[in-house]
Structures are given as C-alpha cells and as structure tokens.
Length: 208
Image (cartoon, rainbow, N blue to C red):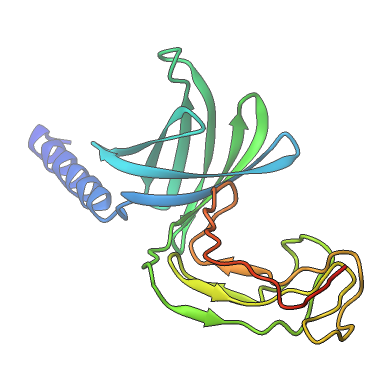
C-alpha cells in the first residue's frame, strides 16, 4: 500500500478513536460505592474528578482511578503512602449509569458497584406521625414507616416497655417496642446521621 494511503488510513483510525473517546460518558461527580470483599459488604462514597483520559478520587484512605473505553471500565486502587504500589485492579462495564466491576482488591477477590449519589434538597417540613405498628428489633429489612429529607422534623409518640400507649391500652408486644423506622433520603450505609431531639416529654403519669 502506498505511503499516502497508509497516512489516510491512520488519520481515519485516529479520528474515529477520538470520536469514541469524546462520546464516552462523563463520570465526574459523586458516586455511592458498594464493595464486596472479605465475605462482607463495605460502603463508601467517592467524588470522581476528570484527569485527562481518566477520573480520580479517594475512598477508604486510598486513591482510585477509573478509566473508560466505550462501556468497558477499569477501576484501579493505589495506596497513598506507597507511591506506585497498587492495592487492586477491577474490570467490568458501565451499563445504564451503573459501574460494575470485579477483580482483586486488598489481596481479595472483590466486586465493585457504583451509582451516582442522588441530589437531595434540605427541607424544613414537619411530619405529624401516628404509629400503628411497632417493632421489637432494629432491622434494615423492615419497610420504612416514613421517608424524610435532611432538615425535616418528626412529631410522634412511643409506647412504654410493655407496649402500653398514652391511653393505657396494650397496643404492642412488650420488650421495648420501637416507633418507626424512618428513612432519611440520601443516607448511605456508613454515613453518620445527626438527630436532634427538640423536645421529649411524658404522655402518662406512670409507665413501665
């Protein structure tokens, strides 16, 4: 093939490669990440920033880089205190806005799933919540009784340790039944929630 033809072919290849890179989605922003390793799930958040042809962020005290080639992704972890040493590489795909990858992380087989963190607006609304069902355990499997946003206030009541309400009626099993649970929009496992008690008062003269 003549040199000028080769040059034309190379220019076409470079052009389409550049177009493909330009069409890659922008991963810049906050992501909620769940990582499965050591037989358990770990959760965190990472803010990715564009750095040339890749995105960088920090989570669990280590630096992470994400590269994207079409729908194929590579997630690379590099320890901060040992320059050049990688603490893991995971490979997978970006599909419908979700990054899913698997590989080795901290010397363990691991999976990585990341979704964009939702944008939650604060609110000053007040909820008057009348409980109808009580629970005797803390569990993420229980359907939330009420969904609230950061900054909102809940006005509600509880029963005593024996399940007796303000009117002296037995409405729940004994054993310190709980009101709720309340779901805070935007909360992610591992977050620290700040709950302020504005006022606490008794609704009976005596209680168990």
